Amino acid sequence: MDEMQKIIMEYVIEEYVEDEDEILELDSPLISGGIVDSFSMVSLKRFLENKYNISIPDDKASPEAFDSVNKICALVKEFI
Image 1 (cartoon, rainbow, N blue to C red):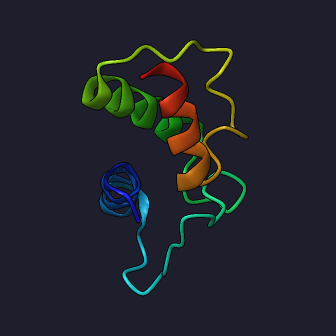
Image 2 (cartoon, rainbow, N blue to C red):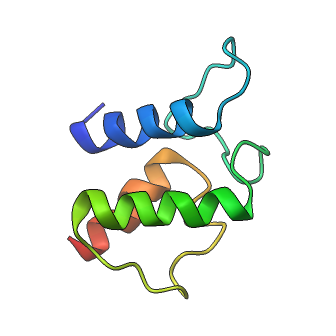
Image 3 (cartoon, one colour):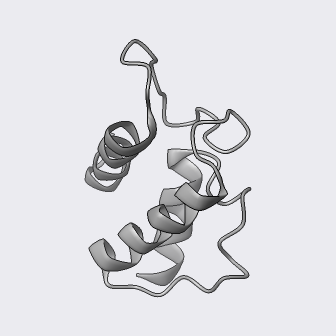
């Protein structure tokens, strides 16, 4: 797990995972798995933009792009 994956995984677990026993993998479905909802996706987008000093266009911030830690990392890397 690289540094970006680690940071995003820790943020997702801390902010959105309610069940302490739930185990997340880098490809675990976040949106389709019900871990991150549309409101949470907005706060996650804001976190990423602030953390990496980027701007993610709304048309790129789709549920598909936010559906796993790996997909989120790929999205962020497009704008770094």
